[in-house]
Image (cartoon, rainbow, N blue to C red):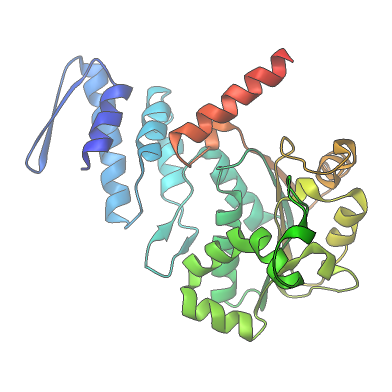
Length: 300
C-alpha cells in the first residue's frame, strides 16, 4: 500500500499504530481502532483486486463510514461498477451521493445532479453514457453546455466560433477520451455517434435514442432550460448537472437550473440528486475551499 494511504489512515485512527513491514501492515492499539482500521484495509484490498484507481479519498471516506457503523453502505457503494475506461479501469461510485446519482440515472429518464465542483457529476454521467452506448441501449451520446463567459469575453479569444467554444467543452472531451480512448473517441465523433456542442445548437431538434448530458446547467436561462428538456425524444435519457453557487449569468435570479429544481421536483420520472462537500472526490483542498466559502456566505 502506498505510503500516502498509510499516512492518511494514521490520521483517521490516531489511537492506532500502523507499521509497514515489506508486504505486511501491522496494526496495534485499542481494539475498536484496530478493528476499524483493518476493515478499511479490507475495503481497499477489494478495490485493488477490482482494478479500481484508489485515492486518499477512498481511505478517508471508508474510515468515516466504518466509524459510523455503515459498513454495508460502504460495500454497496464500492461493489457497483458504472463502466470500464479505455485503460481497463473500473469506474465506481466513491461516495453515497455518487451512488444515489448513478442509481437515479439508471432508474429515471431525467436526472438532475446538483452540487459543488469536484463531486464527479460530469465524469460519472459520461461513464454511464459510454456504458449505455457500448451495450447498444442508445445510439448516440450528446453532450452540451451553455457557452457563458466566466470573466472572459468570447470575442477576445482567438480563432473561429468553434475554436472559441472548444475551451468550454474541454471537460466533456477529456471524460469521453478516457472512456473510449482518444482514437476511438475521434472515430465516434467523425461518425456523429458522439456529439459535443454548445447548448444553442440544440434548438429545433428532437433527440431520440440518445444519452444526453447538459453540463454547467446553472448558466442556462429559464428559456434555454425549457428548450433543452423538451428536445428529449423516444428511448432517450437525460442528465442535467450544475452548481447553483457558480452562476455566471448577469442576473443570478434567472438561472434555468434554479427554476427547474423547484418546478420539476415532484414530476414522476425525474430524479433530483443533491451533492454536498462530503461527496467531493478531487484533491482534499477542494473540499476545504468549498466549506470555507459556504461558511463565509452564511456569515454574509
